[in-house]
Image (cartoon, rainbow, N blue to C red; front, side):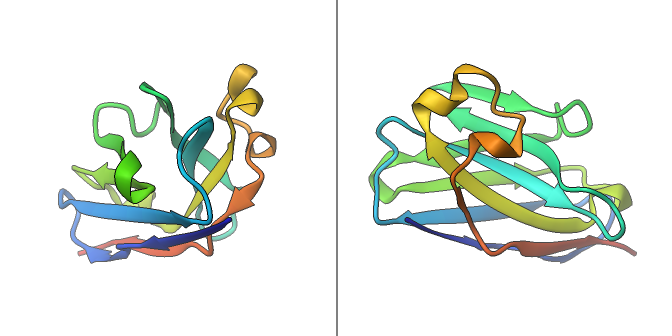
Length: 124
């Protein structure tokens, strides 16, 4: 499985970006997807996840970010609205078998496959 993230860039505070992550080599059947981010000098943190029709968000992005997927394209999206400077980070998409999501999608150990990351910078 290869995960290719894209869509990062520079955006002003209050603006929007949409990240995409295309999965090659498999479908989303029994496979969940998530987004994590890592800011400079900080640990990687959970952002959002989607498994079947269930979605999960961290408290810091709930109400601003929306995760969705297109099963036919094996692509997951992260629509990021009302961006803040503290959202600046490298964003990573990740995937894992659905059985791993029985515990929680918020742990990095849930995921077996990782993309290369895309940089999001929120600055005026």
